[in-house]
Length: 282
Image (cartoon, rainbow, N blue to C red; front, top):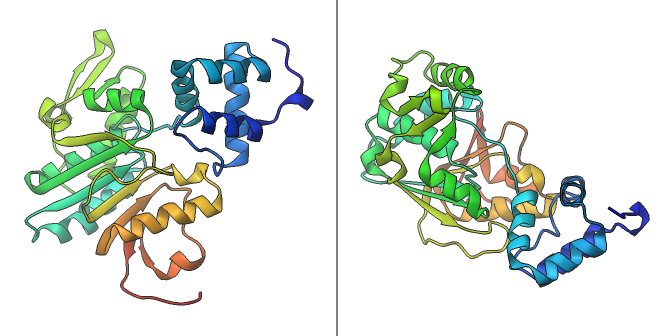
């Protein structure tokens, strides 16, 4: 690998990537993009000139780059206090509705999608739910549709999160929702759950929405943290526009709202509710 740091300019590379694909990462966090492109070059044994050449000539490689840039981590019932709050404070308020519209934006490999379906099933609301889950990663969506995960390394964590999410409630049987095969390192969600979700490939940054629904609940956890402030605001504005008044937005534990949008949402515990108020300044 022949790579000189002085020749490295990830911003120039992002312009080339934008020319060669539908993707625009120019408003992603500088540190995040810099780190991930360097990792791509290191893993592939490429210098910048070689990276540019492969990007211009190999469409399949472009998808590999996108997968590497947008990689997100997720797990079943991550941050159990969030799920416990949803179980006790948010979802019960939807019991009077005939239909509950839900959007998981940046759903990654689907663990949080299935975590919510389990809560809905526990509250006997699942049959009313219309669930959309979107992500830019084709590979992540394929795994999400299968609802198939590694088990042995995560088994204790999965069960611990599951129990903590139902704290103060009658905890359902874990095996009601998952079939585990420890000898094969497999954990699989119930097939009817994976069939319940509309999984759609979608670029949250620039793609038009692939549906026309308003939503009662929008999840976008640990996605905004990878964006610059201006892009974060654009995405939150999109969520605001697509939530019903009083609808709930769930962000990651290290993500928050600032500026103008503090006036458009009210924070309640770990979640945000769309308000009807309008303020010209904050």
